[in-house]
Image 1 (tube, rainbow, N blue to C red):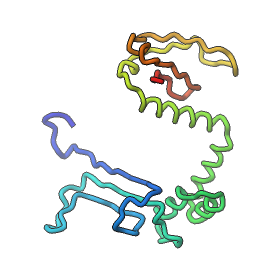
Image 2: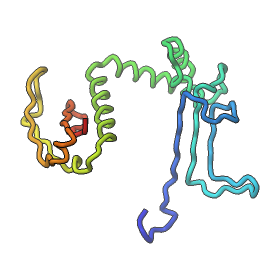
Image 3: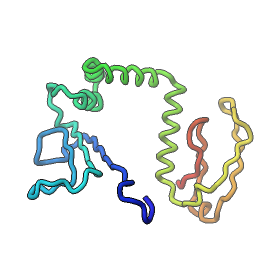
Image 4: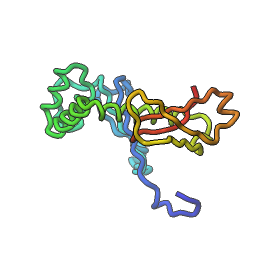
Length: 181
């Protein structure tokens, strides 16, 4: 939203917190939805902000019949048996479990996911804004396993050198960036 824009352009913000801890100490309910509400006047300030919490430690043993419960049981599963029970409870959860198993069995897909996640973690850890402006040029697109990768990097600054910056190169489809050690 920019200066002078109409307030009707404000987008709703929904925060979802899924935790394996007891977050709301005064309640044994595993799911809560919080808004800005004045209980004395019984009026909601705005419907543009919501915080949803799912506390996995508070999940009851017996289903409450909601899809949320089914998904929470899947997320909370610690054993293969619990994982399988969660998959059997709901067709949507079952489809997700099948897809997850396919991805887990496919080494190339698993490597791509791991590379993507590493790239995201590295991006979050970037400390020098100039990194985003850097250019990395790799001399070809496909490399054989074990082959040396040749890359040219521009905009390496003295600050980056003094901070022991490194270049992280990931497989195709994942992030390529610089990060501080």
